[in-house]
Image (cartoon, rainbow, N blue to C red; front, side, top):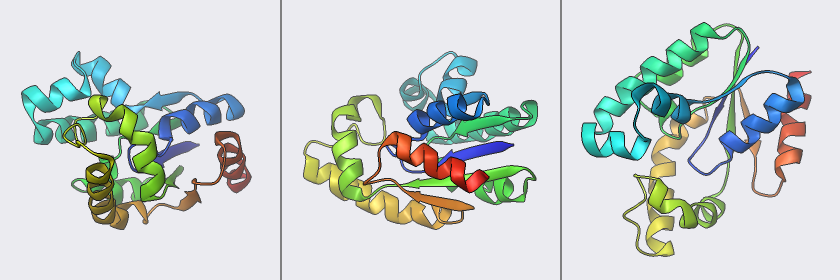
Length: 173
């Protein structure tokens, strides 16, 4: 079994992935951390020094590598991973891969991301919560086309991490 968690930054992919890993006894991999380890630079540094196109190409390469080298895995993607090139279509064609979209409202994402913006290159420029809210709303609208292709969708706003994990586990069995 391979579970791929997708969703906007701040939707809880890494947190939920770790909890799912523990609950299901399946290895967890955070794609962003994997890229940082393999490239020897932070995501922010890669964006700054190499640019987004370079990063997206490496992201696609390392995603494919991770899925090929693990028989069982829970993989948290970056927020933009399924939205570039043919990544989402390629994921949907794979056997034994279940894609789960962790969906959060713009308000929830704004609240979660406001205090993390310095670590996130795409939103570091936001000076006010209103600016951040507007950016997320526009960006999420653009990305929702890809996110909504997932096999399953979990609405996350009103549920604890534990409840979200329980919902995912129930969908598996």
